[in-house]
Length: 198
Image (cartoon, rainbow, N blue to C red; front, side):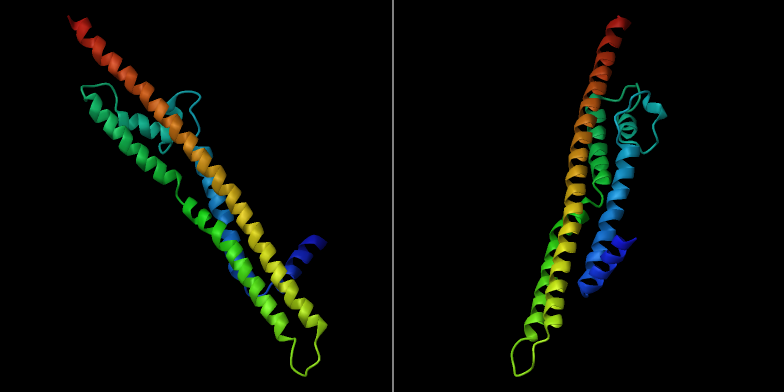
């Protein structure tokens, strides 16, 4: 409990820059949790039957795009699968650009807090007035807290962005391999069925 009170007190010292940094932190956590749910629920490689997967699962969407057995030409199946893969990639990557923006924006906001805090500290020097040591150290503390919060938010967002980017890349590779294998099976079935008819 004492640790949480220390964090709240440090945030109060950080000044107004802490508020946008807090907003970025909440946004980063929300996107991270959302993408974690989406990848866990709709992007895992199917271990059993594809029919048991949810309707919006990436592999089920590819199977649907490839179509069932029939007279549909192979090139059309391939074009539909490629189009669906583009939609799947866009759906899976939703919000990742925001994480990437937070990675850049959070340290810059922290730096802005540093500059504002230092300016406040330096204003206390000069003139014929007495220097208030508490005011000087308070401004320095404000600048350091803002910088620290900005770096923590950026690091969390960076790890999440890199993880989900890599996970998306792996999912798309698995989908491509899955679709290629399925197309090969369909091609084989189409080539053998005319021979059996003879």
